[in-house]
Image (cartoon, rainbow, N blue to C red; front, side):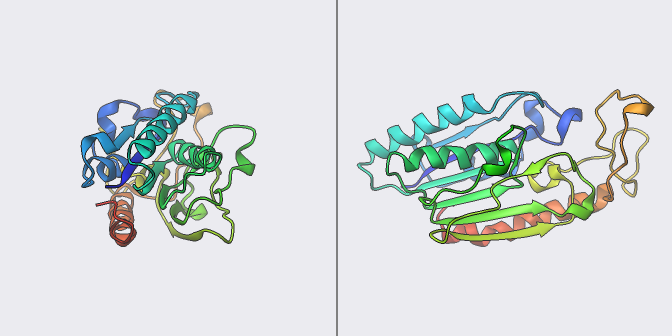
Length: 232
C-alpha cells in the first residue's frame, strides 16, 4: 500500500483563502480519493495567508512519511504531491527524506513556487524517481511576481513538465470564478480584494471561461501519471 502525502497552497491568492475553497483542489482529490487506507495518506493545507510559513506543513509531512515508512518496514512506495508553495514544500521534504535514505517513487507538482530567499536553489533531489510538473505559461500574465521552483532535477530522476495557458489557481484545481458584476468573457484580475486603483496591477490575459477549461485540461493530463505510479 502506497504512502501518499499532499501539501496544498493558498489558492487563487487573497480573494480566496478559506478552507472551503480547497474542497475540490487537485491535491486534495488525489490524496483523499486514493486507494490507500486512511492511516497511509495525509492531506495538509499550506500557509493560510500569503505571508505564511510552509515549514509547519513540511515538518508534519516529514514525520508522517518517516513513521509510516518505518511501520511498513520500507516496503511501501512513497508518493508526494503539492500545489504552489505546498509543491515547494514537498520538494524540500523529499530532500530531507534523502538524508534518511528514503526514496520517493513519484512526485506530482502543480505550479511549484517559492517566496523565500533561497527559492532559486530549490531543485528536486536524487532520491525522487519520477516527477510530473504542470506549470502555467508565462504569457498567461498570472502572478508574475512568483518565482517558479522545482524546474531542475538530476539525471537520476525521470522529469517531465507540461505548460498550460491559465492562472496559477487553475493549475491547482481552484480556477477563478466571476463575482458579481463580472462575466465569463472578462479577463481575470488577480489584485487583492479591496485593492485601490493605484494598488491594482494589469489583469491577466486569461478569461474566466478559459481558466475553467484549462483547469479541466490540467486534471485530464495528470491522470496517466497518477495511474502509472499508483496514486489511485
